[in-house]
Length: 544
Image 1 (spheres, helix red, strand yellow):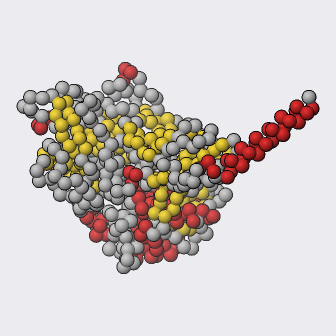
Image 2 (cartoon, one colour):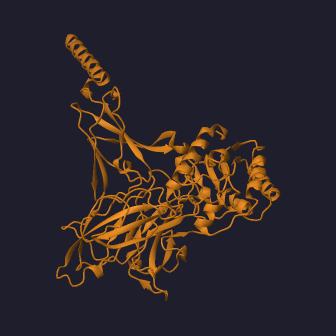
């Protein structure tokens, strides 16, 4: 018996040693460095698949966001998510920023000798060219009023959509098709719209008709950023019912991140531009009885002053609470048109002890940029790219005096260990003096220190008044530059501060660089990435 057990032990040790050597030698890769990965677009999103290795194993897939700094000369990569798969495939979450994936095989003894080379998501290979999402085939046609969706182009201020009767004479380009164009519009300020095809389907004798459509991304001056997307077939069936509810804009969300303290609600409006919209918020799930009518006692209900989003004017940060919201269309008399949208929800976690960090500031902290993107587009929030968890306490339109006034209600209940503070930009533009700005900054510092919160101030970025005027038709105080110097010099006397100002100037070192903020005020995706990269390099300032 002892000989048998010894034999089994020797065989087991030999097997384990052989297996370990095989897994760590790299021979299972068969000389390959790539996974031969393929991206497949499905109605439920992208699927990444790759060649299976000739050995029992499973795989770790790391999703990595690609952040580019000033002038795209510096590229930083950050792991946003890691997940495991027992099969050589993985469903991908939609992302609003360029992403790549690293596939690592695992065996009995952990990771193999190495990972495969990174795989870049092809959605971002053609720069500034929208990638179409909606697909309506002959077997799955649209109604005569379909919603058309595409992936966002982060630098786009708006989009040009062209509807065609046949394939364009030439793919790509930026010009209207001279032969087959039926309809073209540039009044699209989000990554989707509802189009009305009824006028083009009358008297055709057929219920189903084929069109083509394509999209072009535009800048603030409505100049093309790239080329038209490849034209896509659009089969429409006039017998199908029309969608009669706003569509929630749930595409291209950041993989990580959460709604800021002051939420913003986004949707894609109906084709009728005369309609208004109303958002309803509740802390209770909606029941069937109220599927298409208002509830009696909502937490909040408000009419939107814009067609695609609504900024909440109250904080929604009660720990452990789930908030439910929906939107409906109203005619000019206030009557409901069609049905309520689907219901969306966001949850506030329960914190174990004090949160590590929070960000406090105006719209630059709250988020949004490129004219058309709100703080609900988390790729426009610098907190999305930080290396440490940070709660966004920003509020659009904030001024130093307003920030001090809301500090007790918005910051103290959370009581974070560290507070990143970016305030004062709006005071540069108004009539508040530099001396008063410095006094308010001192007051904010004082209230932080009295409550055992470490304030980490960030120097204020420059402005670009000509671009602000063009984007918002709003004048900027002529002394903004002098105030900026005085206030930033004061911030530099603080025990803890992060220098942002020098990194955001144009080539003349006078104004906010246009490639970082097309509206002259709010940094776009590249600007928010740059902010986060700078903060990440100074995270040693944060209280550990």
